[in-house]
Image (cartoon, rainbow, N blue to C red; front, side, top):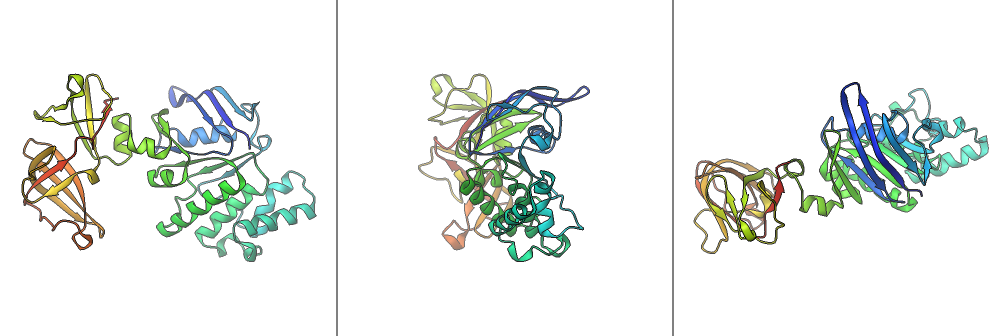
Length: 356
């Protein structure tokens, strides 16, 4: 399968910039997630790649072929829309066959390809049903089969799991990943769900305000966010403002204390120490061997079954969130709201991120 290259691609709506000079290469057979909040430009980018939105400037190539000015039907891309866009008056088989018929494929080949596509998505027995007779997950599979049956060079997915409940989302993201890998299909999908992106994609492209904020494998982006936005979007509520000391010997909080910090790249000027809730331990008494420790009072305690989340207001005025294993699974005893508590974490636990 070919690669997809965006070179300085932009989309403006009058003075509003939806996508700003975006350059990105999606490798042959790679699955890339465009991730970000609503309005960040991810869907606009996907639709420019598919030809449904014209670029204001820049170039899009697929396998070295410039497709920037081509209409969608000449790009040989499969597109799965967020609402599936199935024809309600057509059967499952007719919906899947639609793209082949528009390409003038003969009837016998169309029937064979439709059967193969429905087998691939485990819907062969539903060929004669109408979309309204299917569950949400089954409708999603029909949309996927319709996109795959044309044997596309690239598969584009726009929030494909957003209309499904939690259990179906888990099931379908595994199926999409397995299909993509078995076909070796270059795939780009849009999502606002970080868990969905991290569990499915080879690489994540984190977008914000029409720009690429960070690109990399899920573990790299999750483990080493480069900005306050990236850290916050990827689920780090603890962002402590301050400044690194010379020689990277510590981190001075704006609130006053110096924290021990090791293994971090230097960040000049004001920056933030990002701490994930799961790296912070909570104690009912001062720990004796902690590298970093802040005292405070529990403001909120939330029970999540396998974990307990604490929001603690520290004596220096910062509010931190810690997550502990539930007592029934070997974690510490519950600390009620209003109780005195101490938070600790190792010097290697934090990640320094720039302000912008």
